Length: 196
Image: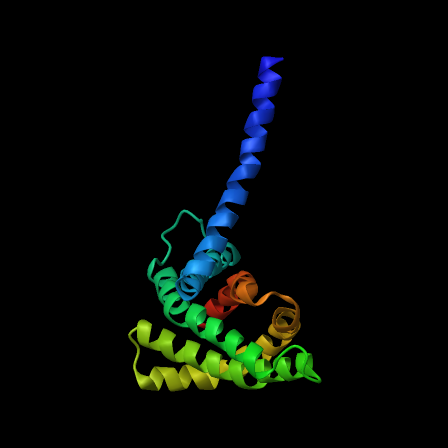
């Protein structure tokens, strides 16, 4: 009987780790909301770029053991930490204050503000900052904008519109950046594929 009881205690301990991690995350979110969201955004953005590189290697039938570009995840971590996390935090606060949930047509107004103003501006900022972090000149930025902005914005509207409808209307305010970051993990993989 002792080994079975030991096994049960071990399995119960496995469930305790995610609960402790969640409790710690919630504590940090309460104490340092912007910093916590910035760090989460940085980590998940870097992971998205890493995922993009892995997908690209698989599509080209290259060995995953071949060298990955460590600068890509670093650039995405910087962008996520300094831009995605903080800007998203303050945008969602602004949205909550400017268009309270009880306002008439609040869900539609929030979605339109996000999709028609925030999304294009945020995508422009993404292209600009990535161009800078890649050490490219302004002419390269203009060329990338001409080539990739409109297709990326159209894809953004297709992918993010239902996601953001749920996010800005149903996800609790403190979790909106995290919710968007999880979806962005795959979105950044798509954006990174445009950069090639």
